[in-house]
Length: 326
Picture 1 (cartoon, rainbow, N blue to C red):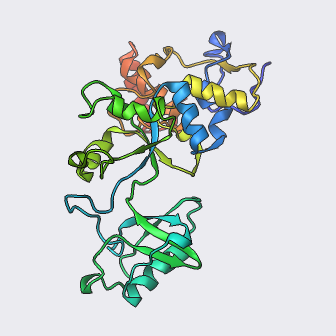
Picture 2 (cartoon, one colour):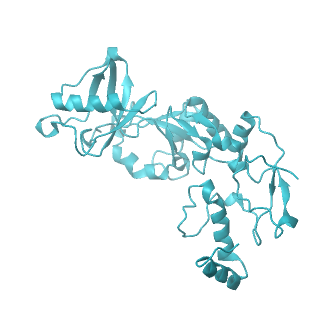
Picture 3 (cartoon, helix red, strand yellow):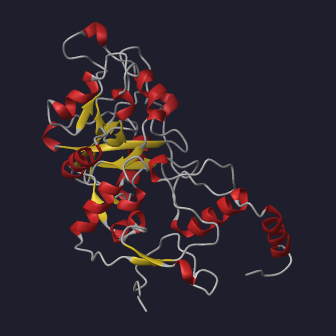
């Protein structure tokens, strides 16, 4: 009798007399749900560079997004109810504290002081619907704010500043107006893990990018996290959670390669992993973001939809609405 030690969470049906003749010892059936899934990595320069090396994808933290761009488009004031604003810690010596009304300064300082955000570089705060006061309508309308709170300087930045995205979409032919080189160069030439958005172009003032260009395209970029945050490997976007990435972190944990027993369900077929990690079916289960708790439901769903014995499947479904059916 071979045991897995309870370490796997793969889509594996229980071993019974109905399927035990098809059980096999698989070294890779659970590679995407292996021990590396429980590993936390820091989204720092080393991790971003490693993700690029393993996947060939262009994963960047973003800088240069303005609070107010050259066209005058600016972010809402951080005192806007239910708004999330982002703040970057700065050197106190270079801080230029903004003159604010007392209520405004006290409210923002209170939120920054009480935040439990563990990120070492930035802090996100949410202004509540009630309970705090600001004098935004009386003159404090400039969204560019610097505050000194308990000896630390905090500068209000764009809400995507230092967020990490997979920007490979912009490297594909025809997707970026300035060509793929201007996206690839940060990694390929500069060896940088940050892409600086040219809201103020350093060489050609006429090429300043409005922030709307970012806002209209960012939906194409899978979001990874915030630079400096801890992230579970299993929470990487599908595009980055490849076999190579999983194997890399498995090896880093020195996991054994004995494999696990996989029995499968009747009529179950091998998943074609080249087609990605999601099924093309409209269901009540979100198959685009993998949840280990739903693996068996995904398998069951595909069997019900595609099995040749549709009458049996539908009778089983009808009966399970009345009593437990094994």
